[in-house]
Image (tube, rainbow, N blue to C red):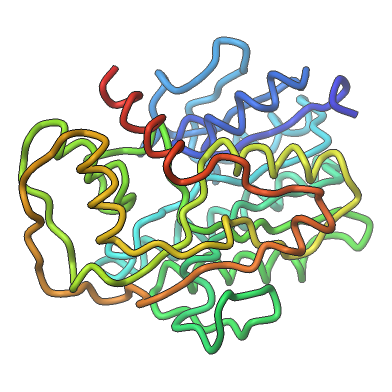
Length: 307
């Protein structure tokens, strides 16, 4: 299927999307990236992809998708900041729900048969009732971002034709090269950039909050695994390990040679205290596991920022 694969990739100039594009190209796929560059960067894109600078809700895409004759839609475009979703919940819902529904509608009318949605796992389950969270854990988002990402998953489940294959990949905290170090999300990129510039590093809360950090190339390989199998439904993608923000600070300080202490500030609304994912379903159904460990991934990320 790979050689014949024609993929529409929304948000493909962004952090995660561009790595997915690279993986698709390496497997011989024809890829059309749709991105309005509101947070993406053309520098992230391979010259082998076709690119359209459009919002995913643009009416022009109805004809574009029909003409391209894609057999898969990979939906990666999103408003991805928890704090931004709290400040502007209407905007978050517009981007993550309504625009997502629009591109889904265009794809269905273009007779696309397979759909892969890059969802959140870290913000979906809320404060966990048990750890690690598997796919059966109750859904209880505590931010508009988590709510909007889950809502679109439900719309895919409800509105796609029964003949369509739909897979929602519920991602842990993704990190790696090309993550925006100036953004509000992505603690690894933010810490790394500030340490390399010898600037102060802020930690919200006491730093003992923990996350499941998964390397971006492992996320891209999970998308390829979906394309290579019949697996569908909701699947967690994570390392299965929890790491505190203080541990990330310590490891990056050692890697970079940073000597300053962190500045602790009040914790942020909408942030979960502890979360890590059970990814056994991915291992069973996709034959996928995270291959890049945290230490190796941090080194790759720092080296990419060093240039």
